Image 1 (cartoon, rainbow, N blue to C red):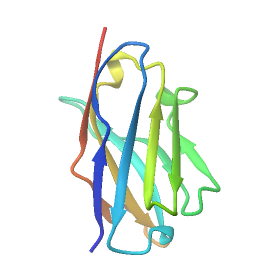
Image 2 (image 1 turned 180 degrees about the vertical axis):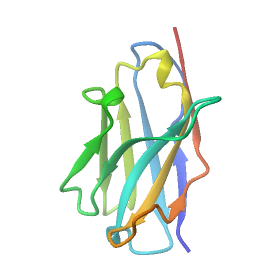
Image 3 (image 1 turned 135 degrees about the vertical axis):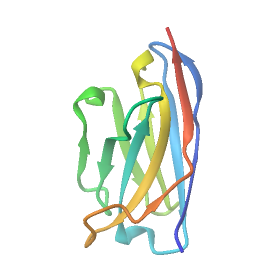
Image 4 (image 1 turned 45 degrees about the vertical axis):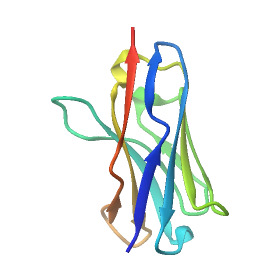
Length: 119
């Protein structure tokens, strides 16, 4: 069974930075593509960024392009989300998720970490 544990959330002022981490355990990390999602109060959960199993490709949603960077360290079984120039609208609970390359949907989810950006 895969377990995902996020960390690194917190309170930051607008324009500041945070780095989220997601520790993966239970299966072979390199068989999973990894994604970061977020859910703000009263809103649907939305995708933020995705990275392929080898780190060879990444994809970002428009609201975070140029500000957020997803990366992974396969030796540490960890995926990261570097968030720069944070805006109040980035306030949300951030989740990491794992998807096998052959899956159409994400198979496993973390418990989430709160990010709050003050204006």
